[in-house]
Length: 65
Image 1 (cartoon, rainbow, N blue to C red):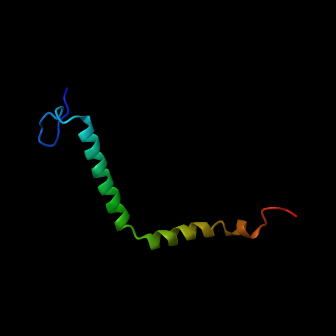
Image 2 (tube, rainbow, N blue to C red):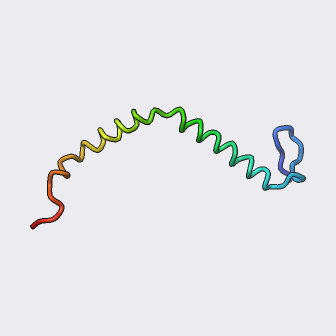
Image 3 (cartoon, one colour):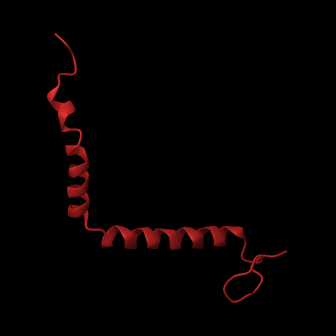
């Protein structure tokens, strides 16, 4: 059973490496798109809200004297 690309042509002549590299390129493009579309200031605000839930622990000393 051979590997097929988008044109339904057996891609065994291209080799498995071209498929792996192509998949990596597509994955990188998707991750870059997600990274640039993310509102990082909003993400920081949401993370700070979650950290504020644990604010009581910050007031307690870590070591007893």
